[in-house]
Amino acid sequence: MAIERTFSIIKPDATKRNLTGKVVAKFEDAGLRVVASKRIQMSQAQAEGFYAVHKDRPFFGELVEFMISEPVVVQVLEGEDAIAKNREVMGATNPADAAEGTIRKEFALSIGENSVHGSDAPETAAEEIKYFFNDDEIVG
Ligand code: CMP
Image 1 (tube, rainbow, N blue to C red):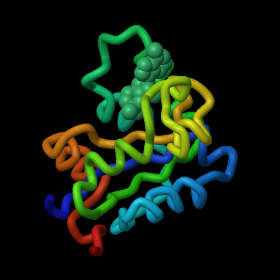
Image 2: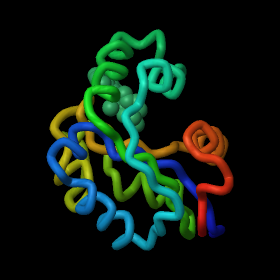
Image 3: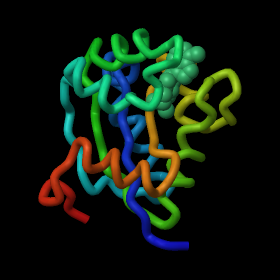
């Protein structure tokens, strides 16, 4: 296993319900370190660009609307096997399928309002981190 970095978003349904700290505690309890963090209001163009891979999916419009509906917290998480570990802590995309103790099982409202996003592979992690952070904003 290697030390990796992954990208995370605490989504509007979670920031709106004041769950930022509880979500971060889940990451930290799993051994992930927050090495960059900022609370932002995403623009429509930013959300459309970030989710461009989903632009032909039927839920794309709804997804973008949701992601700009309230502030989000974008973060870089670092640790052993961080990409897989983060996905494990988040739980399945649909909270109905998420395992006990995961963020989505405890906090998510639906498949769309599912509290967190996490990178799915090293290439996407690198791209997603770059989309929101300059190198000098990441302090390990
Ligand atoms: P995320 O990991 O942010 O990546 C794409 C997002 O699309 C996903 O989490 C879900 O929140 C969202 N999504 C996936 N399927 C659906 C769906 N059927 N309806 C609404 N949103 C969806």
